[in-house]
Each structure stands twice: as structure tokens, then as C-alpha cells.
Image (cartoon, rainbow, N blue to C red; front, side, top):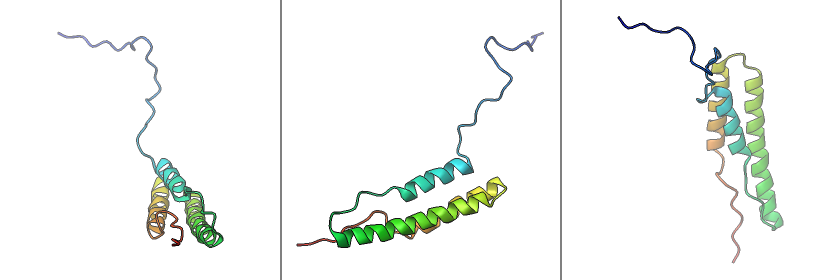
Length: 102
């Protein structure tokens, strides 16, 4: 009959392995970083105004996601905040597009 040893292997610990999978908090942080990442503005004052408007809208939706997450007490609430942020950012321009002049 085969005997199974119950002694731990050399170097083994009783602590569980860290979970490297996606968590709601990690997903939300990545979305916030993506939301706030923008290229540098163009030197033209009109283009800079458009850039500042877009940056302000993006920071508002990121702030709202942070408030939702901070008000949540569950993992499901964090996922909901991430989902709302993704939806709000999807409605915004992907990148700042400077005005084209000829």
C-alpha cells in the first residue's frame, strides 16, 4: 500500500500562495490610470483649451469612480465602480485631437 507523507516539503510554508489574478481593486486602479493618461497638449492656445476640457472630464469620471469605490463595502461594489468608470470613459474621446490648420 502507498503511504502519503504529511510532513511539509523542505522550504514549504503554511501561508497560501498570493493570488495574482484580477481583483476588483486592481481592475479599478488600472482603469483609473488609463482614464487619466493623456498625451501632452499642443502649443496652440485653442488646442490647449480643448485638451483642458477633456482632462477635466476624465478627472471627473475618475473621481466619481473613486467615490463609488470608497462608499462600497463589498468586492461587488468595486466591480460596479469599475464598470461605471469603463462606461463613462468609453463615451469620451480616446485621445486629445488638436485642431488641424493648413
